[in-house]
Length: 86
Image (cartoon, rainbow, N blue to C red):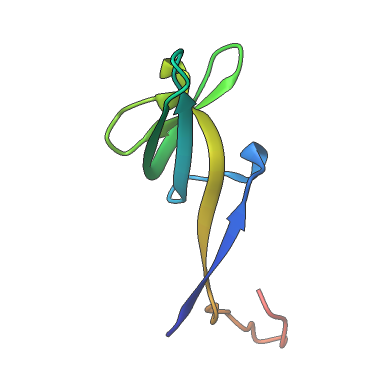
């Protein structure tokens, strides 16, 4: 089974299990990067991504650059007695 990937920059499409890349621009103009797999979200005034490590990079000023989603080429389907695909 092969797997293909989809890259998105839309925060609303991020889901648990996705790999995210985030960037922080420091006050001196430097750039720091972090990445990780999404565990869940925290809803305060804004939604924030919680990584599997337990870190919440957005609380430290990081912003989402992209999200990498794995999409299996083959999806398991169940066919009912009536011939419908579920």
